[in-house]
Structure formats: C-alpha cells, structure tokens
Amino acid sequence: MHGRKPKPLYADLPFELYVLPVTELEQNCSILVDRDSRDAVLIDPGGDVPGILRVLATLRAKPVQVWLTHGHFDHVGGAAELKEAFGIPAIGPHEADAFLVEHVEEQGRFFGMPEPGRSITPDRWLAHGETLAFAGATFEVRHCPGHTPGHVALIDAAHNIGFVGDLLFQGSIGRSDLPGGDRDALMRSLREQLLSLTDDFRFIPGHGMASTIGAERTSNPYLTDIV
Image (tube, rainbow, N blue to C red; front, side):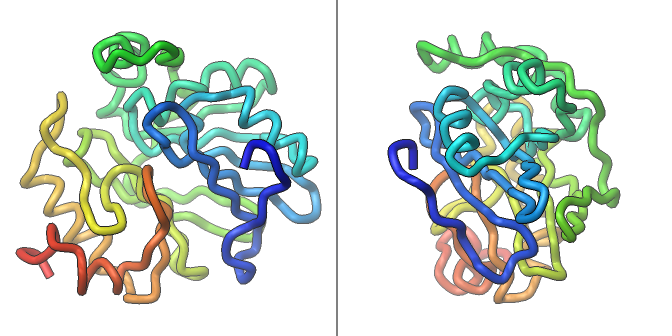
C-alpha cells in the first residue's frame, strides 16, 4: 500500500476502510476515512508512522482520533507520535492494559525490535458497552480479555464490520501465553463476544486477512471446542 494509491475495502460501509500492515510483525493498522470531510480514525497504528503519513497524504485524509484495541507494542507503538503530530486524542484500550501501554519500549526490546515505538497514556480508557461514533457508524466497545487483560473489540453490528485486534484471526486465535494472558478468558471472550455475532459479520484482525464469523465458526480449528 505504501507505493500506490490504496483501494478501500467493502464498498457498502458508511466510511472508506483501508488496512495497512505495519512493523516487522505485519500488524494491521486500519484507517477509516469520512468520505465528505476526509477526517480519519486510525485503529492500532503500531508503528511505521512515515508510511501511515504517506497513505494519509495519498488519501487526502486528516486523522482526528486514534483508537487502540490493546496494549501490545505492535498495536500502540506509533500512537504517541501521531497524537503529538496532529494534536488528536488516543482512545482505549480498557484500563486493565495500562501496564502494557505505559511500557511499550520495554515490550519491543524484549522481542528484539529495532524500532519498538513509544509508550503512551491514552486520553481516555474504554469500558465495555460504551460506543464510539464516526462517519455515520457506531461501534460498540466489547471488553474481551484473554490475549491481554484490557483487550477490546469494536463492533458495528449495523454494518457487519468489526475490529478485533489479536482476539481472532483467519484460521487462528490470539496467544494467551504473554504477560496478562489467560486462555480460559480468551475462549470465553470468543464465545460470548464474537461467536454471538451473525455468520456474515466481517472482521479485521490484528494480523493477516479479513474474514467472517461464519467462516471461522466452520473452519477455524481453534474454535472446535466452543462452537
């Protein structure tokens, strides 16, 4: 996406949606753009800020908020720089991830990353059941602990789209062996917060390709015990 004009995903959404892999871990930074105002929300800008800025310039888009699904460095690492550059708020994740977002550099060094990003104190934390609005869409915040204690998913049921961080992937699920991880909590979050959605519900994971709940319900081997 860095060298050419990107194409939006899902033409039926009330906003333009672009997904930009960033960092050495190919983490999905989602960019939501209001078609009229060209305001943009950045979800999980984990790093590679120059690349994010190039895409924003190509789209003629101006970031107005950063939303964070959880506190791992590859999802948070670029948020502080973008917040300062544009004077915009960083929102989320749940406060239970404070110990992660406040120690981004240490996380990155632990994983041997040459550019781990920067720690950040969000302008506000997110709580289960509240909503975030943008460009005619309303996202319900669902607290989904397990991968991290403060992980959240952002669910727009009206338009069948959600951003689920590292909770669920195409063909896999999130790790629970990192600090604060809990396998039982992860499986409960999947069962109660994601598998309760309709089969045609589309989700953008933290890594890899987008998928649907129906596809994962029938083919994801990690969901066998909970579907």
